[in-house]
Length: 163
Image 1 (cartoon, helix red, strand yellow):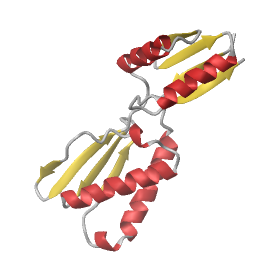
Image 2 (spheres, rainbow, N blue to C red; image 1 turned 135 degrees about the vertical axis):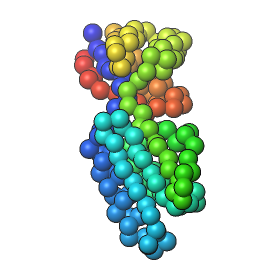
Image 3 (cartoon, rainbow, N blue to C red; image 1 turned 120 degrees about the vertical axis):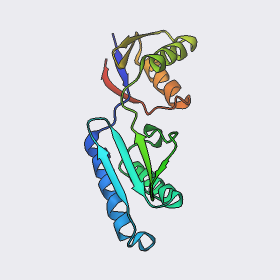
Image 4 (cartoon, one colour; image 1 turned 30 degrees about the horizontal axis):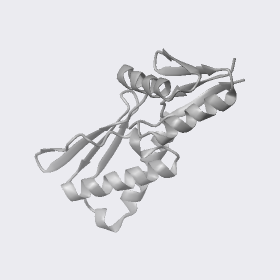
């Protein structure tokens, strides 16, 4: 029986490359010469920590970081930009968590979306992946298109396709 897995994983090496390329561009930009800029990736917790002198520069660094990450093949919705910055002393700090894995609530939402579509497939939640099985590969491809077209706020990858 054909099946595939729906996952949401961010490659740590790709993320590290994107952060390093963003650091390099910020170091070379004229408007950041002589200012305090700290961009750090915590690989264990999957959090990017930013520290700059002003809120305006923080927004510019966020834009550069997103642009470089998208050029590396990461999706922009993998970054949780909803957290507000904190100002302590003369620096502005912000932590940007990177979404990695499908949590239970999102998995239930995806399964409900697939079941409500009326396609003849069976989704099953397995830890942080969703396995979808069906009799025809065409039905599985329809599920992939359904997941891509619906706005789910997390980046999805479709792996382990077996026929």
